[in-house]
Length: 255
Image (cartoon, rainbow, N blue to C red; front, side, top):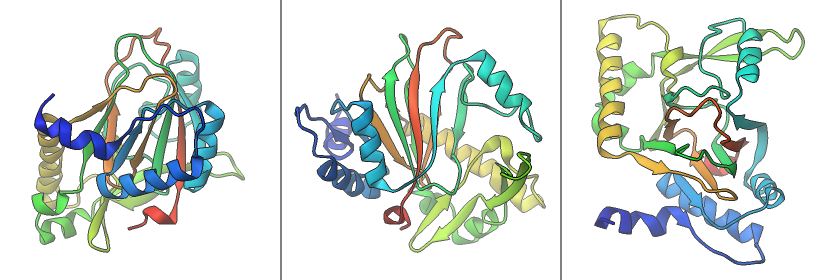
Protein backbone atom coordinates (compact mmCIF):
# COMPACT_ATOMS: atom_id res chain seq x y z
CA UNK A 1 0.00 0.00 0.00
CA UNK A 2 1.47 3.40 -1.02
CA UNK A 3 1.29 6.64 0.94
CA UNK A 4 -1.63 7.92 -1.18
CA UNK A 5 -3.75 4.92 -0.22
CA UNK A 6 -2.83 5.33 3.45
CA UNK A 7 -3.97 8.93 3.36
CA UNK A 8 -7.18 8.29 1.45
CA UNK A 9 -8.48 5.27 3.29
CA UNK A 10 -9.55 6.90 6.60
CA UNK A 11 -11.23 9.76 4.73
CA UNK A 12 -13.40 7.79 2.33
CA UNK A 13 -13.88 4.46 4.10
CA UNK A 14 -16.21 3.57 6.96
CA UNK A 15 -15.06 0.20 8.23
CA UNK A 16 -16.94 -0.89 11.35
CA UNK A 17 -18.34 -4.19 12.54
CA UNK A 18 -20.80 -3.21 15.22
CA UNK A 19 -23.78 -5.44 15.81
CA UNK A 20 -26.03 -2.41 16.45
CA UNK A 21 -26.11 0.08 13.59
CA UNK A 22 -26.77 3.72 14.47
CA UNK A 23 -28.36 4.90 11.21
CA UNK A 24 -28.48 8.55 12.24
CA UNK A 25 -24.80 8.59 13.18
CA UNK A 26 -23.87 6.75 9.99
CA UNK A 27 -25.84 9.16 7.78
CA UNK A 28 -24.17 12.13 9.50
CA UNK A 29 -20.76 10.59 8.82
CA UNK A 30 -21.67 10.06 5.17
CA UNK A 31 -22.72 13.71 4.81
CA UNK A 32 -19.43 14.80 6.34
CA UNK A 33 -17.19 12.64 4.15
CA UNK A 34 -18.97 12.87 0.81
CA UNK A 35 -19.19 16.68 0.86
CA UNK A 36 -15.40 16.86 1.19
CA UNK A 37 -14.15 13.84 -0.76
CA UNK A 38 -16.99 13.13 -3.19
CA UNK A 39 -17.59 9.50 -2.21
CA UNK A 40 -17.70 7.12 0.70
CA UNK A 41 -17.30 3.34 0.76
CA UNK A 42 -19.07 1.68 3.68
CA UNK A 43 -17.60 -1.70 4.56
CA UNK A 44 -19.72 -1.88 7.69
CA UNK A 45 -22.03 -4.82 6.80
CA UNK A 46 -25.64 -3.66 6.44
CA UNK A 47 -28.84 -5.56 5.88
CA UNK A 48 -31.00 -4.40 2.96
CA UNK A 49 -33.47 -2.95 5.44
CA UNK A 50 -30.73 -0.99 7.19
CA UNK A 51 -29.41 0.27 3.84
CA UNK A 52 -32.87 1.46 2.79
CA UNK A 53 -33.37 3.18 6.13
CA UNK A 54 -29.99 4.87 5.65
CA UNK A 55 -30.90 6.01 2.13
CA UNK A 56 -34.09 7.63 3.41
CA UNK A 57 -32.06 9.54 6.02
CA UNK A 58 -29.93 11.02 3.24
CA UNK A 59 -32.78 12.61 1.28
CA UNK A 60 -35.73 12.04 -1.03
CA UNK A 61 -35.73 8.94 -3.23
CA UNK A 62 -36.15 9.53 -6.97
CA UNK A 63 -35.61 5.97 -8.20
CA UNK A 64 -34.66 2.48 -7.05
CA UNK A 65 -33.12 0.06 -9.57
CA UNK A 66 -31.82 -3.49 -9.30
CA UNK A 67 -28.62 -3.55 -11.34
CA UNK A 68 -28.17 -7.03 -12.81
CA UNK A 69 -26.95 -8.55 -16.07
CA UNK A 70 -30.08 -9.75 -17.85
CA UNK A 71 -30.43 -10.03 -21.64
CA UNK A 72 -34.25 -10.07 -21.57
CA UNK A 73 -34.51 -7.00 -19.36
CA UNK A 74 -31.94 -5.27 -21.57
CA UNK A 75 -34.04 -5.96 -24.67
CA UNK A 76 -37.25 -4.80 -23.00
CA UNK A 77 -35.62 -1.56 -21.86
CA UNK A 78 -34.29 -0.86 -25.34
CA UNK A 79 -37.66 -1.60 -26.96
CA UNK A 80 -39.42 0.84 -24.63
CA UNK A 81 -37.28 3.72 -25.89
CA UNK A 82 -38.20 6.32 -28.47
CA UNK A 83 -34.71 7.82 -28.83
CA UNK A 84 -31.33 6.15 -29.27
CA UNK A 85 -32.56 2.67 -28.49
CA UNK A 86 -29.03 1.29 -28.48
CA UNK A 87 -27.76 3.64 -25.80
CA UNK A 88 -26.35 1.77 -22.76
CA UNK A 89 -28.71 0.10 -20.31
CA UNK A 90 -28.15 -0.99 -16.72
CA UNK A 91 -28.80 -4.64 -17.57
CA UNK A 92 -26.02 -5.01 -20.14
CA UNK A 93 -22.86 -7.06 -19.65
CA UNK A 94 -20.78 -4.71 -21.81
CA UNK A 95 -18.61 -2.13 -20.11
CA UNK A 96 -19.92 1.35 -19.36
CA UNK A 97 -17.95 4.50 -20.19
CA UNK A 98 -17.43 7.15 -17.53
CA UNK A 99 -20.59 9.21 -17.15
CA UNK A 100 -22.97 11.02 -14.81
CA UNK A 101 -26.43 9.71 -13.99
CA UNK A 102 -29.58 11.83 -14.01
CA UNK A 103 -28.74 15.46 -13.17
CA UNK A 104 -31.76 15.84 -10.91
CA UNK A 105 -30.30 13.62 -8.19
CA UNK A 106 -27.52 14.72 -5.87
CA UNK A 107 -26.30 11.38 -4.57
CA UNK A 108 -26.08 7.87 -5.99
CA UNK A 109 -26.08 4.93 -3.63
CA UNK A 110 -25.26 1.30 -4.44
CA UNK A 111 -25.76 -1.68 -2.14
CA UNK A 112 -24.13 -4.99 -3.02
CA UNK A 113 -26.44 -8.01 -2.79
CA UNK A 114 -24.04 -10.26 -4.73
CA UNK A 115 -20.77 -9.49 -6.49
CA UNK A 116 -19.36 -10.84 -9.73
CA UNK A 117 -16.97 -13.73 -9.18
CA UNK A 118 -14.12 -12.06 -11.07
CA UNK A 119 -14.58 -8.28 -11.02
CA UNK A 120 -17.64 -6.00 -10.98
CA UNK A 121 -15.72 -3.10 -9.45
CA UNK A 122 -17.14 0.41 -9.54
CA UNK A 123 -14.73 2.89 -11.15
CA UNK A 124 -14.75 6.56 -10.15
CA UNK A 125 -13.17 9.82 -11.32
CA UNK A 126 -13.27 13.01 -9.25
CA UNK A 127 -13.90 16.19 -11.30
CA UNK A 128 -13.37 18.51 -8.33
CA UNK A 129 -10.25 19.92 -10.04
CA UNK A 130 -11.97 20.88 -13.28
CA UNK A 131 -11.42 24.56 -12.51
CA UNK A 132 -7.66 23.92 -12.50
CA UNK A 133 -7.67 22.10 -15.84
CA UNK A 134 -9.85 24.58 -17.77
CA UNK A 135 -9.80 28.38 -17.84
CA UNK A 136 -12.88 30.39 -16.89
CA UNK A 137 -13.41 31.21 -20.56
CA UNK A 138 -13.21 27.53 -21.51
CA UNK A 139 -15.65 26.53 -18.78
CA UNK A 140 -18.02 29.20 -20.05
CA UNK A 141 -17.88 27.67 -23.53
CA UNK A 142 -18.45 24.17 -22.13
CA UNK A 143 -21.48 25.44 -20.24
CA UNK A 144 -23.01 26.07 -23.67
CA UNK A 145 -22.68 22.39 -24.63
CA UNK A 146 -25.93 20.53 -24.09
CA UNK A 147 -26.34 16.94 -22.93
CA UNK A 148 -29.65 15.25 -23.62
CA UNK A 149 -31.61 13.33 -21.06
CA UNK A 150 -34.62 11.18 -21.82
CA UNK A 151 -37.55 11.33 -19.41
CA UNK A 152 -40.78 9.40 -19.60
CA UNK A 153 -44.02 11.38 -19.78
CA UNK A 154 -46.33 9.88 -17.11
CA UNK A 155 -49.42 10.65 -19.19
CA UNK A 156 -48.32 9.17 -22.51
CA UNK A 157 -45.59 6.84 -21.21
CA UNK A 158 -43.48 8.11 -24.10
CA UNK A 159 -39.91 9.31 -23.81
CA UNK A 160 -39.25 13.04 -24.13
CA UNK A 161 -35.90 14.77 -24.49
CA UNK A 162 -34.71 17.55 -22.19
CA UNK A 163 -31.30 19.21 -22.18
CA UNK A 164 -28.84 20.14 -19.45
CA UNK A 165 -25.45 21.89 -19.70
CA UNK A 166 -22.28 19.84 -19.59
CA UNK A 167 -20.82 22.26 -17.03
CA UNK A 168 -22.73 24.57 -14.69
CA UNK A 169 -21.42 26.95 -12.03
CA UNK A 170 -22.49 26.20 -8.47
CA UNK A 171 -21.21 28.76 -5.98
CA UNK A 172 -17.44 28.19 -5.80
CA UNK A 173 -17.57 24.82 -7.60
CA UNK A 174 -18.81 23.37 -10.88
CA UNK A 175 -21.41 20.71 -11.56
CA UNK A 176 -20.68 18.20 -14.27
CA UNK A 177 -23.33 16.36 -16.28
CA UNK A 178 -21.31 14.15 -18.63
CA UNK A 179 -22.98 11.45 -20.70
CA UNK A 180 -20.70 10.87 -23.73
CA UNK A 181 -23.34 9.02 -25.76
CA UNK A 182 -25.86 11.86 -25.23
CA UNK A 183 -23.65 14.85 -26.04
CA UNK A 184 -25.21 17.28 -28.50
CA UNK A 185 -23.25 18.12 -31.62
CA UNK A 186 -20.94 21.09 -31.01
CA UNK A 187 -22.14 24.40 -32.48
CA UNK A 188 -18.73 25.72 -33.50
CA UNK A 189 -15.01 24.96 -33.66
CA UNK A 190 -14.40 26.26 -30.16
CA UNK A 191 -16.89 23.82 -28.65
CA UNK A 192 -15.46 21.01 -30.78
CA UNK A 193 -11.92 21.70 -29.55
CA UNK A 194 -12.99 21.95 -25.91
CA UNK A 195 -15.04 18.74 -26.08
CA UNK A 196 -11.88 17.02 -27.29
CA UNK A 197 -9.99 18.60 -24.40
CA UNK A 198 -12.68 17.40 -21.99
CA UNK A 199 -12.33 13.85 -23.34
CA UNK A 200 -8.57 14.12 -22.85
CA UNK A 201 -9.20 15.32 -19.29
CA UNK A 202 -11.29 12.20 -18.55
CA UNK A 203 -8.66 9.91 -20.09
CA UNK A 204 -5.85 11.63 -18.16
CA UNK A 205 -7.69 11.24 -14.85
CA UNK A 206 -8.45 7.61 -15.66
CA UNK A 207 -4.73 6.96 -16.14
CA UNK A 208 -3.53 8.90 -13.11
CA UNK A 209 -6.32 9.14 -10.51
CA UNK A 210 -8.64 6.18 -11.05
CA UNK A 211 -10.56 5.10 -7.94
CA UNK A 212 -11.52 1.42 -7.91
CA UNK A 213 -14.02 0.02 -5.40
CA UNK A 214 -15.17 -3.59 -5.57
CA UNK A 215 -18.09 -3.90 -3.20
CA UNK A 216 -18.50 -7.09 -1.21
CA UNK A 217 -21.97 -8.34 -0.25
CA UNK A 218 -23.64 -6.06 2.32
CA UNK A 219 -21.26 -3.19 1.56
CA UNK A 220 -22.41 0.07 -0.02
CA UNK A 221 -21.04 3.04 -1.89
CA UNK A 222 -22.31 6.62 -2.10
CA UNK A 223 -21.05 9.26 -4.52
CA UNK A 224 -21.66 12.96 -5.15
CA UNK A 225 -23.45 12.73 -8.49
CA UNK A 226 -22.58 16.27 -9.66
CA UNK A 227 -18.89 15.71 -9.05
CA UNK A 228 -17.92 12.04 -9.52
CA UNK A 229 -17.99 10.25 -12.87
CA UNK A 230 -18.53 6.50 -12.63
CA UNK A 231 -18.21 3.44 -14.85
CA UNK A 232 -17.47 -0.28 -14.74
CA UNK A 233 -15.72 -2.87 -16.87
CA UNK A 234 -17.21 -5.66 -18.94
CA UNK A 235 -18.99 -8.48 -17.11
CA UNK A 236 -19.68 -12.08 -18.15
CA UNK A 237 -23.12 -12.69 -19.65
CA UNK A 238 -23.82 -15.07 -16.76
CA UNK A 239 -22.55 -12.68 -14.06
CA UNK A 240 -24.46 -12.88 -10.78
CA UNK A 241 -23.54 -9.31 -9.84
CA UNK A 242 -26.53 -7.60 -8.19
CA UNK A 243 -26.43 -4.05 -6.88
CA UNK A 244 -29.36 -2.02 -5.61
CA UNK A 245 -29.05 1.58 -6.80
CA UNK A 246 -30.86 4.61 -5.42
CA UNK A 247 -31.14 8.11 -6.85
CA UNK A 248 -31.22 10.51 -3.89
CA UNK A 249 -32.07 14.21 -3.86
CA UNK A 250 -30.77 16.16 -0.88
CA UNK A 251 -30.41 19.87 -0.21
CA UNK A 252 -27.34 19.03 1.87
CA UNK A 253 -25.43 18.27 -1.35
CA UNK A 254 -26.35 21.37 -3.31
CA UNK A 255 -23.11 23.16 -2.52
